[in-house]
Image (tube, rainbow, N blue to C red; front, side):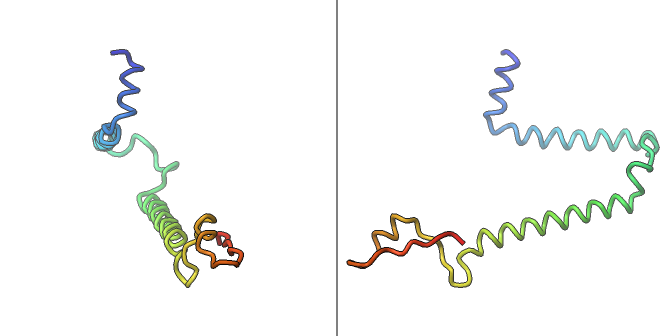
Length: 109
């Protein structure tokens, strides 16, 4: 099989996600093994900081991701809250208007 065909088949199948996950796990174990063998001195602490600084950065990142997720869910799911209700498409609003009255079309809020 040609490499382009293999890449196309892999990209279009559902095996891409588990393979990427397995590669990430193997890469993490590999880098941990290299760090242990070099006594954690292979990369200096000046660009990365000490473990407490790295933990603070990761904690801030995780907190921001949770905040962003909750904001998106609130905006997405909270649209029907507070009495606003879902916005009807125009063709439904036109059919549901009483006889002799103009339909009122609602705009998205």
